[in-house]
Length: 156
Image: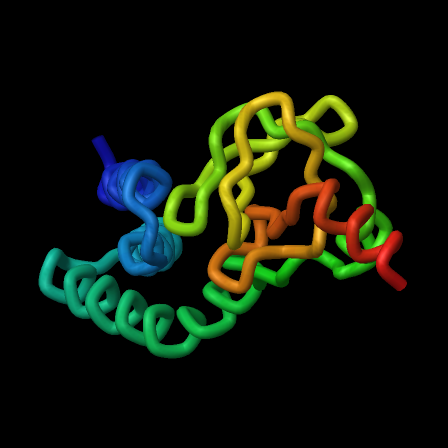
């Protein structure tokens, strides 16, 4: 088996290993192996020269391309747009699991189940008005009893 084929297969093995363990480190050794395979195919070199090419090209790829790869492939996590939350504030949800001041529960709204918190106790079957997102978790709704809102409206 020729040297360049061995280096190519080693580079492919590094690529497969990178897919199994994220971090963008191992892929640069794959790039180094493929660079060595190219030099080995084009020029007649010894093992010492191939190892030097492998080490040098791997390190150059690691330090030269890692930041670019991380920026390109890792993506950016953004909070959900507030537009949806603004649309559901003031809407009524049905309590499906007990909610208390120190107990996270659950509400059903538009066919979906949401975790919910409240400053008063709510039991399954109660109607709750959605006040917005919880400050602790953007996927948890802050709710209040519907009867409280109706009482406040009748007083004003």
